[in-house]
Length: 311
Image (cartoon, rainbow, N blue to C red; front, top):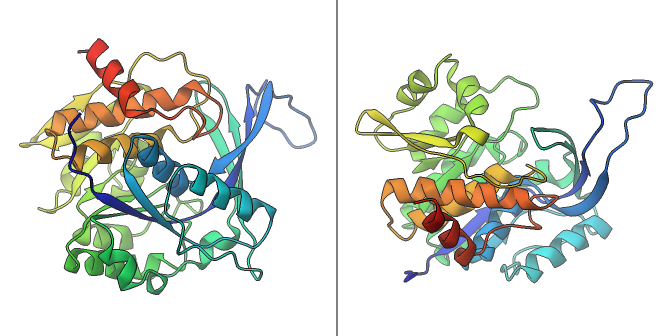
């Protein structure tokens, strides 16, 4: 594939994922549930998206906060091992790196997160020099990044003024408040990448179509991830969709973040909209082949092969 390489700056949270696979049932207080397997992997929506982009061959810079601890150094090594530029990352002895426990099955997952350093990153920590080196800014986990959230719109406006395109994956709101500040932030965002539950919660709508039309602000394209149902976006007033792909799934952890990587990989190469959502769906589907969000992310060749086979 010919590509006009663009550098992506991912600004977001850093944490370790402890993935428990194949639970025999939902954990219940006072009882014990066995898992088939467990794995420690690089975690966080931001890291998984960044590593997915790098796996596809994109140039990626990552900026965030991490502790000067074993988990922080593990994450830093994983990012560097993926070929991601981490020059701006500084392990901080006053912080503790976040941890997420993922209780995963083939159908779904439940997450328990200790935010740690995640909540410490501020918009002001993203300097103009970082923006000047990038073509696109991606931010994940709007609701977990409590210090970034109040001025996230300002960060996107700065990025736009510097000539960057922008994208935002909101993630889940653990407090289930959601808030109108995200809708206001979208005024400065080119691509919004929620899953269906997040979209309905953010907009307060009951139907997918109503929710998409609610967010149609004349600038932001919203692409909705629907798991096994694929994905959908507005196109000319109607709905444009792409299916999920038939993969022998092992673990769904981080599939939405790998979707983001696949979509951005295509979108930054100016592919047609239908191809962009197909790329997102292919990369999200392929990522479920292994335990954790990063162990089996798609290469560009794997995504192309799956798309060709499904044409």
